[in-house]
Image (cartoon, rainbow, N blue to C red; front, side, top):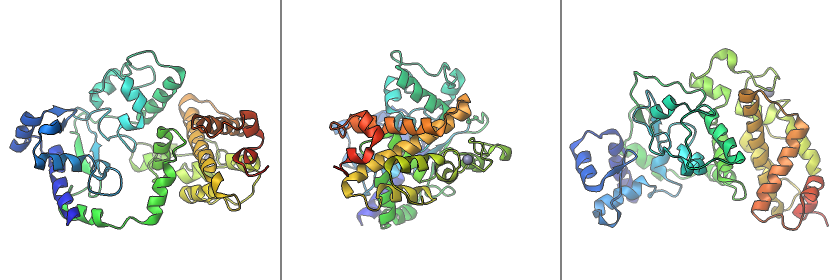
Length: 366
Ligand SMILES: [Zn+2]
């Protein structure tokens, strides 16, 4: 019964998005105010009914994350009524979630997609206005954000609209949502979710892995499906001649995938890698024969691998720069060390130790 009530309240959350001309919306707007295209919660002054709706909008009602926000998505036409940082319109989450530090420093938090596009969101474009000068590593994440936007072409004559992810055609329905909320969460999916959110890696990397596991990265096959790329352009940038899919790029590719063999050599283990990305993560994170306490180290290494493969792929496409696999391996060693160090998991050993003998550092050998 509880889920049914939540599904009913969700209907109001949906209407608040799609029916802004309605009388009731204008009444609520006058009472509680509007910010970033959304009604405000009114602090302690809201009615009980209003507080319940706000709690559903911000995620109450299911065990996992914010089920309502996760299932609404902005389909951008001309970009005039979509908020660049705030709405979920590109990638797997709103840009303020994917790039929280950039959002914090941004001078145009309330800008629309159209405004940002007009100012220019290329690297060095006029859209990037910050409260202070950026540091080198911050510049790098702007590059990342910019590369996410490079394929986007606004359709000036089309209106932006909301899409209910669970039902693209009919939009929100109480019945469909009730079904979704009462669906038993399968252990595999929950495990998958946990696997992405490793606490020792930066949040943006977890978001990235989450997208990867759900096959939502802008890989070339996905862009082709969204008609954002031409059939002739979907060859892997590694030069192997195959089509770029996430399974190809991260595992099978002779060029990028070659990194894994170097990793096994470094870890002094041998096994045949599974070809699906999610199986591979599961296999790698729970390496047979290695004790439980090594698993969080292994997960960090796996996250560093896929993260650096993706960065290398983007650097190759957007900046025409390539690194050979030995240098890539060095980046994995350094990046994983820095993440572990930032989480105080490495106080007992130095980078040189990690570089030479990771198993010793994990405490597997004496
Ligand atoms: Zn390839």
